Length: 110
Image 1 (cartoon, rainbow, N blue to C red):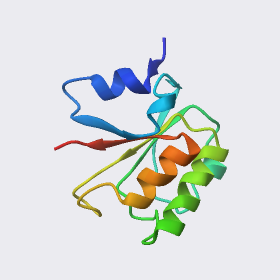
Image 2 (image 1 turned 60 degrees about the vertical axis):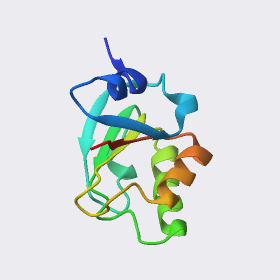
Image 3 (image 1 turned 90 degrees about the horizontal axis):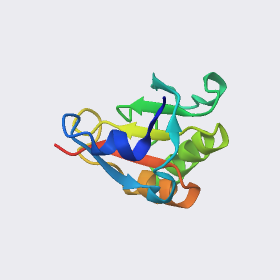
Image 4 (image 1 turned 45 degrees about the vertical axis):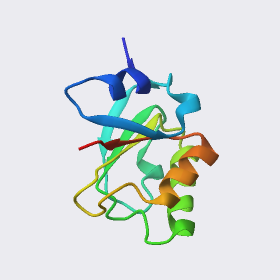
């Protein structure tokens, strides 16, 4: 049985916080994929939890919006965004785009 984005974010040992796209938190995750490409869409089939340190999401709100748009078009379940490696916190552009495209964005709450 697949786990939902909501259940994953609520797992106490992972330290995740759902920061965007809460409306679709009951999407099932079928696979987890760590990827740092600016356009991971060609390698996705839908239902994935895409994990990134933010290395290639872009520096501007517009670039970040486009990145999330590509994930949305690929029908990913959620984006897990590492905080502390490339970005101190999830960028505003990622959060706004996650809400606009209803893509779940979870971050390391620590």
